[in-house]
Length: 325
Image (cartoon, rainbow, N blue to C red):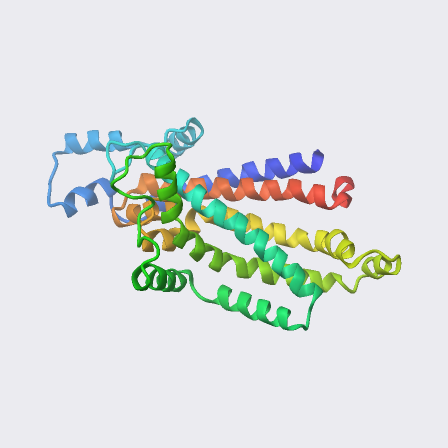
């Protein structure tokens, strides 16, 4: 418990530090987002109207420290201001709607990729040097090396445009009303196949290579030799002796993958016009929607820290030695 409490305090401090950087970065950029928005539209506002608009969007005039305290208070109260692009919607509503789609897509893809990649890595390491090992290793390295945008375009071109097996974009059929029905859920699953295949292709290679290398490093350890000398079956030794210990670094890579799913899906969501956080972030950058950008970065930071804390808890469960550390 003391170990976990220390980690929890560390992650809280890291979140405040990330929020501080998130506060100062937009203010170091030249220009005023409200003035830029109206100057790009060719519209001029009197000073009184411009000041009222700034207050509406949450841009507080005053000393920098006062703005910083107001910003921290808005974070912990859940008031992230209003979106400039989607005005008058609040940032929490814009990101909350997109969060559901990203978690459903990226969360499922990450879990599937982690399970398949770990399983393939275990088998490849246990059968190292075999044809299966060569095929899996080369395929995993190739999948990891290809950029996500290239994989997205190739999958979309083959299965979407050429063969026409799956839709080319959107999260569901636009003609259907969003509802908790079999027809709408089936349309969501059908439209999510190509983005899911793309993300799994990108993620599975890293998990496979990591697990295979960890397993190979452990197969020569004394406790593996002792387990075999005791007459235990190969499956028992592979799962409970080698794979369990090799899983620790792989869990760390899983935390990184979970922490980046909210922003790492930007390319895939833009290619497939998927209404997730990645697409929202892209649209916010084009529109200079700083409140949405800041809210998105805060969600990514919080997700990364929560994922790492869960990994710390998992470490204690997987490695009993940490309980006495």
